[in-house]
Image 1 (cartoon, helix red, strand yellow):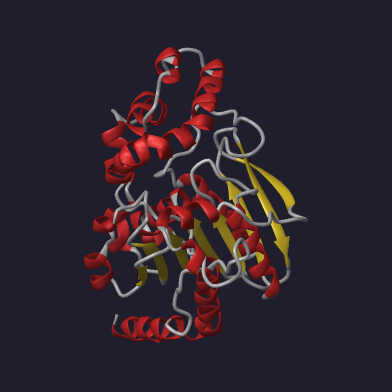
Image 2 (cartoon, rainbow, N blue to C red):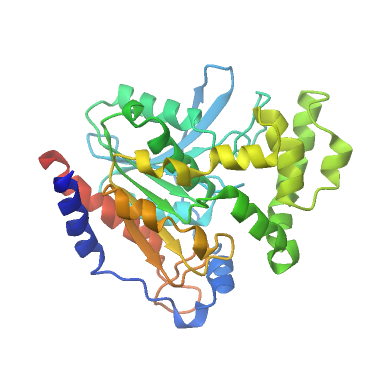
Length: 340
C-alpha cells in the first residue's frame, strides 16, 4: 500500500503540470455546464451489437487502432450516447495516441428502444461488467482504461468498488468526471435549482421512453402519473424504482450512490469534480474517502460546472480540460503499467 501512496504522489505531481484555468468568458458554473454541450461529434465510428444474457442488445461504437494498443472505454451520462459532445473530444485524443476508442451506449440510449423490461440507471453495473469481460476475453493482450461522465461515472465507481476482485486485471486505471457521489442529494438539487429546470430538461426524453416501455410491457408503470412528472423524485418513484426492483426513489438512490463504494476501489482512479457544480453540491465531494484510499486521485477544483471544465481559448473554441486530463492520467499509467 505504501507503494501505491508513492505512485499517487507521482501522478498528482504530473497532473499538477496542467492545472485547470477556466476560460474568462465562461467562468460561471451555469455557463461552463451549458457551453460544454457544444462541440464536434465523432465521425467514422464502427458499430458493434452484442447480445446480452437476458436477450437484449448493447451497442458499442469504436474508432482507432485494433492491434495490441490500449482500449479506452467511455460511459456516457444521463440520456447521453455516442453523439454526446465529450465523446468526440475523447475519441480524437485516444486515436491521436494510437489507441482504440470504444463508447458503450446504455440500454435505451441508442436509436432504438431496448427489448428487455429494464433500461439503465445510475447503479446498474452488469452491462459494464459484461462489456469489459468480453473485451478482455476477445483481446486478452490489451490493457483497458475506463472513463465515465456524470451518471456513467457513478456506474463506473460503483462497479470498481462493489466487487473489486471481479474486475479484470486488464483494467489498469479509470477516470470519473463529475460523478454525482450522493444521488439523493443530487436529485434534490436538480429538482429545486433554477426552478427545477435541470430535472425537466432530462424528463423531456425520459418520460417518452417510459411511456414506450409501458407499451412493450403493459401495466409496468402508471402512464398517466408519469406524464405529470416534473421532478426526478417523482420519476424515480414511478419508473426507475418499479422497473428495476427498488421500493421507491430513496431506496434506489441510497443503494446506487457510488460514494459508499469508493473504499473498495483498488485500481488507480481519477476523480474530477468542481465545487461549483450546479448538479453536485460541494458538500458531497468525498474528501475523507480520498484521503483514506491511495488508489483515488483527486482533481477537485473550484470552478468547472458539471462536465464542463472549459479552459483557455477563444469563445466557443475552448479547450476541454477534464477530457485531456483523464487521457494524461491514462497515458501516465500506460507508461508505468508494466512496472506495477
